[in-house]
Structure formats: C-alpha cells, structure tokens
Length: 131
Image (cartoon, rainbow, N blue to C red; front, top):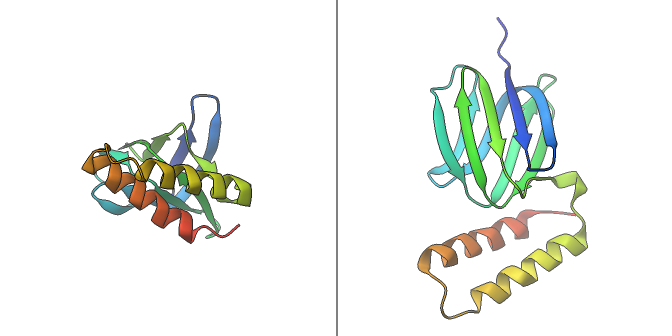
C-alpha cells in the first residue's frame, strides 16, 4: 500500500518544494507535529523552526521557516510561508544577520510577551542551524 502523500511548500514568489513524502515534521505553536498519510485534516500556524520532510527514498529535506500556515486535507499537505528556505541554501552571513536582527528586536523594552516568545524561539532555532 502506498504510504506517501503530497507536500508543497509555497512562497508568494514560487513553489519551493513539491514532492511525495512519507512523513513531515512541522514546528507549530502546539509543538512539533509529525504528519503521515491519512492524518486527520488540520489547519495550523507555524512558529520559527525547521520543517523536516522524509521523501519516498527515506532521505530528509530540511527547510527553515519563520512563520506561515499549514493545511492538511485529503493527503495533501500545503505549507504557505514567505520565509521558507532550504537549509542547504542558508549562508553563514544570512544566519548571522538574522541572529543579530532578532537580538536587536529582543532588546526593545516595548515588545509584547508573544513577540518575545517568538523571538526567543527563533534564536534557539538559529543556534541549531549548522552552515
């Protein structure tokens, strides 16, 4: 029996990734969430993190996202994000600049607790990325 489902990661400019996959792990606000074929339909928001997609051959592709939305319906998973980037395409300069910008935003005393949570989580994720 076929255990794959369709994954599409889409930005406003282009389709970043479109493949059949066995499993996808997403960084949602409810926690990291893994999706397999026949998962219950769901719509959720992404928090900063890494999307891990296991293709038919068992290899993993990883994408860094800062935000976005996810919809899973009828064995089709669609991720909409203006910030999705394949981890292989990240440069040290990009990660360092994003890290500095995030720390600068955290230094602002007038940010909300929600923004502080997101920025701290983004820093944690950026520390894990090896480029």
